[in-house]
Length: 81
Length: 212
Image (cartoon, rainbow over the protein chains, first blue to last red):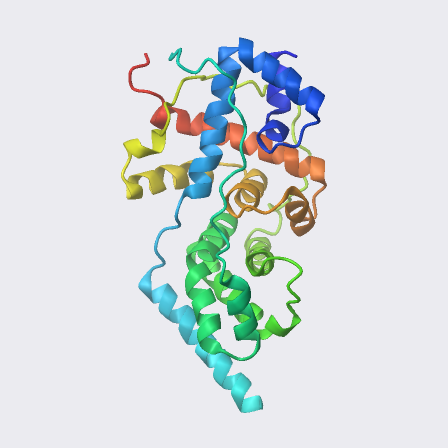
C-alpha cells in the first residue's frame, strides 16, 4: 500500500465498501502516513459539511409561483372529475 | 501541522437528514386525496429540489421550471408511486430528469455525462493541511453557504451531478448510476474526483489558521 493506491481506494474506504483485507491494509498505511490521514480526514469533512448543509431559503416569489401552479393543477384535476 | 491525530481515522456512516419518520404516512395520506399532506411534502422538499435543479441547470429560471414540473408530475403520478423506494428518491429522480431536459435544451452540444475521464490526471492532493475538528464553525451560516456553493459550481458538470446525488441527496451508488445512465465504476470515479476537487477548493477556507 502506498499513498497513490490509498487515494484511488479513498472513495470505497469512506463509503465502507472495501473488503476486509484491503481495508486493513489501508488502515495500516494510515497508521504510518500522516499525509494520508489528513487526506482522509479532510475529504470526509468535505462530504459531511455538504451533506449537513441546509439549502438557502426559497425566494418568496418562487415559493408562491410553485404553490399557484399546484393549485391550478388541482383545480383542473377536480374539474375533470 | 497538528500531531494530535495519530490514530487512523475510522470511517463512519454519513449522516442522513433527508427522510423524516412521518414521510410514509404523509405519502399515504396524499395518495388518498389529502392535499394538506401533499402540501407538507412540497414545503419540506421545495428548497432541496430547487437547489438540486439549480446545481444541474446552472440557471435560476430553468431550475424554477424544473422544480415546478417535478412537483406537478409527482402530484399527477402519485398513484403510481408504489413505495419501493423513498418518496424523496422518487421525487429526486423526476427532478433530475426535468433538470437534465432543461440543460440539454439550452446546451444541446455540451451535455454529456458519460464522457471518458482523463485517468492520467494526478490524483494525489497537493495541499494537505489539517482543518481541525469543525472547520465549518469558523463561518456564519450564510457565509458558509456561499463558500460551498461557489466551490461546487466550479466542478465539471458530470462531477457535480454525481456529487450532488451521492453526497448531498444521499442516494446510493446504484440509484445514482441508474438515474444518470452511468456504470457503477463511472459513478465511483466521478465521485472520487469531485470529492478531491472540492476538498482542494475548500482547503484555503478550512485549514487551521495556525498553519503557515
